[in-house]
Figure (spheres, rainbow, N blue to C red):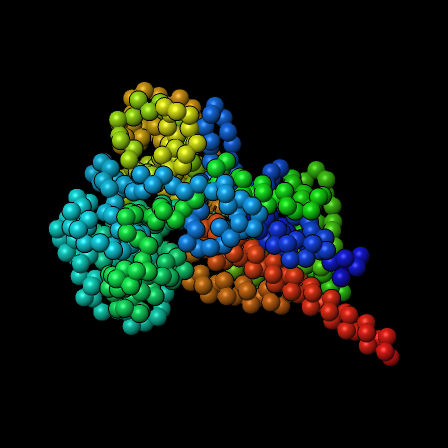
Length: 490
Ligand SMILES: Cc1cc2nc3c(=O)[nH]c(=O)nc-3n(C[C@H](O)[C@H](O)[C@H](O)COP(=O)(O)OP(=O)(O)OC[C@H]3O[C@@H](n4cnc5c(N)ncnc54)[C@H](O)[C@@H]3O)c2cc1C
C-alpha cells in the first residue's frame, strides 16, 4: 500500500475512457485519492470542440448512440441530459456515392441488412442482379462453424459482392475507418452473427423482430440516426463535465506517464515525464491509453501482455472541416452526410453535413461540412499537409455537392493511430491480455481496444474497470480490518 492510509488510484489517459474511470472511482468512493495523468495539455483525447466565427467545430466525434445506454446514463448522473440534442428529425437519412452522384441509402437499410423491401427494390445503387442476390440471403443456410471471420467475408457470403462493395464497405468504412477484409465480424457486428445463428438468416431475423415490434430501424437509413445525441455545446461538454467533478488537484495535464513499476510490497510506482517529472506511489492504476502506448508502458512489467497490446492495430484519419454560405451549395443537403465506396476511387471516406445534423453548429445562412480522410484503406491520405487536406475535401465536395466558390472558413484535425481496429483474432488477443493482467493486483486497463470503439462502450469499460478497482481496494480494506481485529484479539 502507498504511504498514507488513504487509498490512492492513478488513471493514465485523459480521454473519455480515463475520465469515465476516474469519475466512477470518485463517485463510488470519494475517500479514495485520485490522480489522472494526461500527456496533452488538455483533457478529452480525441474529443475536442472549439467555437470560432459562430461555428462549432468538432475535432473528432460529433455524437454518440443512446441505444447502448452507458453514455446517456452517465449524462443523466452528471446533469448533462437536458443539454443533449437529438438529430434533426426532418433529415434522418444518408447518402452513398454511386458513379459520382449521391444516392439515398435505402430506408431501413442499417449497416448491412435491409428491414424493408420496397426501398431496396427501388434503389438505383444496386443492379437487378445485386438485389436478387441480396434477397437470396433469406434462403441461404446458416454457417455451421462458430469460427470468427472477416466482416467482408460474412457480408459477401450472406448478401453477395455487390451489396458489400456498394453499401456495406462504405458504411463500415465510415464507422471504423477500417478495412472490412480485416475486421472481425464477431467483434464489430456481433448482433448480425447472432441473427444468423438464431434465425438462419439476417433478413428473417430483422423481419421477425419487426413484426414483434422490437426493431428500431424503420424510417432510418445507414445509421439509426434517431438514436444519436450530442451536447448542445459540443462533445467537449461531456469530458469537461466529468473533469469538473473530479477532486481538486487530481488532474495532471502535460504529464505523460513514462514508466510504471510494481512496488515491492504492493501497489505501483508511476514516473512521469514532461516539464515537471514526478514519481507517485499508488495502490491501483488504470491504464486507459491506446494499445501501442500501453504496450510501451508495460514492456518491463509483462513482456507478453505488452506484445499482445502492441499487436492491436489502430487506424489514422484526418478531418477537414469546411464552412460555406448556403447559397454556394447546389445540393439540397436533405440528409446527414454521405459515405464513399472504395470502388468510386475518391479521396475521402465520407462527408458529414454537421450543421444539418445538429442545431447550433453554424450561423444562419452558413453550412459546416466535414470530410473524413485516410482510414485503414487509404492511410497515406491522412498524412497529407493541411492545405492539401483542405483542397482535397473542397474538390470532392465541389464535385459531389455542386459547390461554387471557395470555403469561407476551414479547419483540419488529425487523429494518428487513434481508432482501434478489431481484426479477426482480436477476441483471443484481448482474452490473453486480460488473463495476463489478472496476475498483477492493482493493475487494470480500459480504452477503445477492449469492448467497443464507440463513446458509450468506452464509458462502459472505464466505469466497469473503476468498479473493479474500488472493489479490490475495499476488499483489501476489509481484509486489513479483519486482520487488524484478529491482531487486537490475540
Ligand atoms: C475522428 C474520430 C471520430 C469519431 N467519432 C465518433 C462518434 O461520432 N461517436 C462515437 O461514439 N465514437 C466516435 N469515435 C470513437 C471514439 O471517439 C473513441 O474510440 C474514444 O473517444 C476513445 O477514447 P479513449 O479515452 O479510449 O482514447 P483517446 O481519446 O485516444 O484518449 C487517450 C488519451 O491518453 C493519452 N495518453 C496516451 N499515452 C499516455 C501516457 N503515457 N500518459 C498519459 N496520457 C497518455 C492521450 O494523450 C489521450 O488523451 C471517433 C473516433 C475518431 C478518432
